Amino acid sequence: MTNRFSRISALRSNFLRLNQTGEISFNIHFWLVIVSTALIAVLYYSWQYWFPWFWRYFAFEYLNRILGVPFIIFPFFYACFKFGWRGSLLAWFIIILTLTPLFFQYYLLHREQIVLNIGFLTIPLAVVLAAAFELYWREEQKQRMQEREKERQDYLAKTLSIQENERQRIAQELHDDSIQELYYIASTAQNIASDINNPGETRRQAVSMNEGIIQVMQGIRNIIADLRPSILDDIGLIPALRWLIQHVFQNYTIDAGLVVNGTIRKFSPDKEMIIFRIVQEALSNVRKHANAAKVTLTLTFATDGLDIEISDDGKGFNKEEMLQDLSPEGKLGIYGMSQRAQLINGTLELKSATNKGTTVLINNIK
Image 1 (cartoon, rainbow, N blue to C red):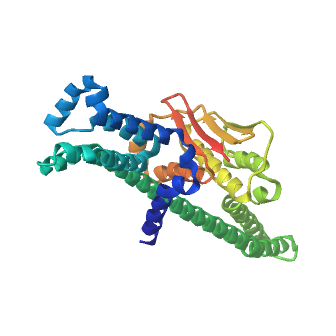
Image 2: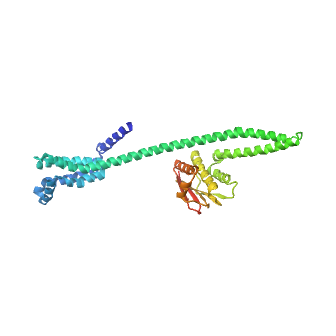
Image 3: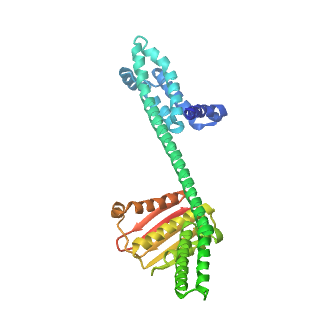
């Protein structure tokens, strides 16, 4: 309610602004409205003396109770186009005041005709006001949608930030607690295996235990790297993306490469993490679904932002069929990439065709 009252107050302030600041005295369009209204008024009030040719048109208006149509044709609509609904309302009042003596002169004995004539002249004003109200309502709805979208974006950003913080916490705990404990157990097993006083079977079991623990530790390290790659925090986005390419395709025979164009610029840590997650999801999709032999990640830096392209030579897909057949997990992956791109003012675009590979574009990252 407070917001609505503030908007009404703003409308009233805007309506009075020209007169308050004195700008109206120097506005040529305002004076065109005034002068044209005055000229038309002279025509109506002096036609019997100076403009006898006007009598046929005047008689037509009088018989049809539509005196004042020329006022609507130029001053009213001109004010509407130049000043909006406020100008049209002001022009309408000026026109009615100008015509009032004429109404009483010709319709004095039939005052209902005055009401009909004014009603006719009110029709264009009603149309203008209705259109203005509709435009205002649409603008208000648009503003509300923008506010809701901003709230949704803020909520999404906070949610992703919480997720990243939780990932970082879990990765830190795994590194500080689980890895250290496993390392201690592996060292103990190694000591048992190295002690020649232990029976041979015990030593062999200790060696097997040591190898198994080392494999588990490596698996946990991979999980830690997926949860929160420390390389991104330590040395930046480009080295982190090079590492990511190697990490994602380390057990696959896929020719993967990184191309960087332009002068490298640094983004905020939050934006770099979002960029990293988008590329991570796109490369994971290539590994899982594309059956590609080659994939290229291209970063193009410009003065006004960054464009990212992930292209592969895989089997591709038909976009319409893909969106229908894709699993909920896959749809959420694409949706998540799109939402993350919006958080960094970017746009996500998918290009693909059957047997012609797939290209993921993230443009205008700022």
